[in-house]
Length: 107
Image 1 (tube, rainbow, N blue to C red):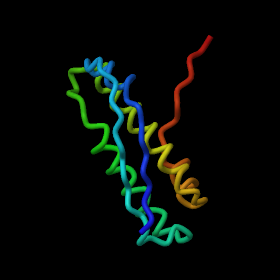
Image 2 (image 1 turned 30 degrees about the horizontal axis):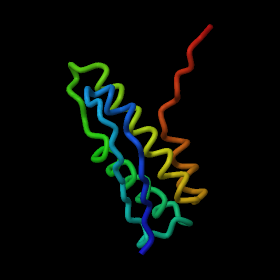
Image 3 (image 1 turned 180 degrees about the vertical axis):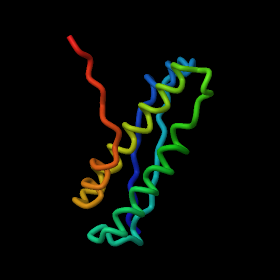
């Protein structure tokens, strides 16, 4: 069965959340039962990746702005890595179409 497994050092996200000790965790998404060459399969894969990233990164309190930002960054990073690891053009295209834009600092 195919699956995506990502081992990630979470030192930055954990430090932002007040946990100074670096930790390595794994996010696993099972996609072996999907046809990633079909629109439906790609959509289901992206849903699974999104749900796994949300579970992996957690949700911070809305009152904790730095924790909320760290959680959102973690989700974006994990989703991007998982989508890349699928090596599936339809999953990548769907992700790029639905991913929120990244704000760049202006000079």
